[in-house]
Length: 428
Image (cartoon, rainbow, N blue to C red; front, side, top):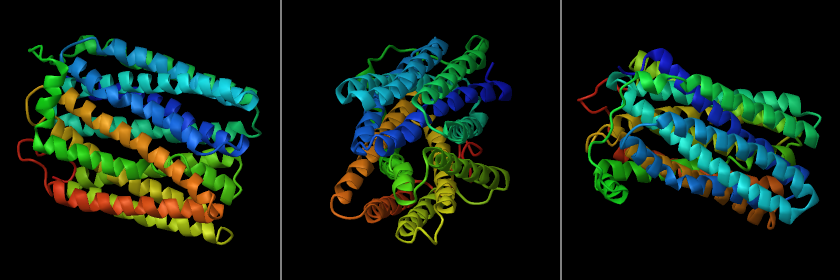
C-alpha cells in the first residue's frame, strides 16, 4: 500500500504542529527580547541560528530513513523534544529579565533542543512521505503538507497575538505550554498506525553515510539545486528576526499587534501557495521556473515597499506590504517544493530521504545565516543611523538577494518538468 489522501493530510498535521511551535521562537520571543528587554537583535539572531545550525544533521536523519523503518518514533520523539525546547525558550526569556547569564544558558539549551526536534521529526516525516507516497501524488503531498504548516504558523501567530495583550510573563508561559502540549497530542493522533499500514521502501545496501552523501553530491542537478536553495532561503529568512522589531520600533506596534502582523504575513504565504497550486496544477498556467522567478521578483518589490514605508510611516501602512511579501514568498516556496519533490526521485534510486535531507540542511543553514545576517546588519546600521533607515537598508539588501535568486532560478531550473513524471511538478 501507499499513502491515501487522508493519510497524507494526517501527516500534514505534523508539519502544522512543527510550524506552530517554531513560529513562537522566531516571532513572539524574538520581539520580546529586542523590544521589551532592550537586548540587541543579534542575540535572538544567534539563538535562532543555533537551532538552524543543529539541523545540519538533517541528511543523517534522511539517510537513516532511507536505510529502513521506525520513522514514527523519530517523528513523535522529535516533536516531544521540540515541545520541551519551545517551553524552555519561553522560560529563558523570563530568566533573561532577571539574570542575563542564567537566561542565556537556558536559552542556548532550549534552542538546541528545538533544532534537534525539528531535524529529527521534520526530516523523518518528509522521508516517510517520499518513500510511501505514490509517485503521481508526491508533488501534491508536498504542497498539502507545506500549506498545512503555513496554516499552523499563521493561525498560531494570530491567535497568540490576540491572547498575549496585555503581556505578562505568566501569560506567555501558559500560552506556550498550551501550544506545545497540543502539538504533541495532535502528532500522536496524526501518525498513529500509518507506518504499519504502508510499505515504505528501504535501501537494500548498507552503504556508509559519507559514501552515500558523496554519491548525491556528485549528481549535477542535486548539487546545483542545493546551491540555489541556500541562496534563495538566505533571502527568504533575512527578514524573519527583524520584521517584528521593525514594526515595534518604527511603527510603534504593541507585542500583540506585531505578532498578529507575522500571522498576516504567513496568511499571505498561504494565499500565494494556494494560488500557484491552483493555477499551475489545476489550470496548467505557467511553468515551474516562471513561478519561482515571479515569486522572487515580487518578493524583492515588496521588500522595497516595506523599506520605503519606514521613511513615511504616517502615510504608508505596513500591514498590506507585509501581506504582499507573504504572497510572493508563498509563490516562490511552493514552486521550489515542486522542484524538490521531482528532483528527489531522480538520480540513484531510493535516495529520496538523503536528497531531501541535503536540501533541508541547506535551507536550515541558510535560514540561520540569513536571520543572523539580518539581525547583525540592523544592529550595525542602527549605530550609524536612525532605526527606519537601518532596517530599510537591510530590507533593500534582502531584495537584491531575491533578484540574484531569480536570475539563478532562470538559469538552473528547467522551464518544463522532466518527461518521466509529467504530473509531479506544477506547471508541466
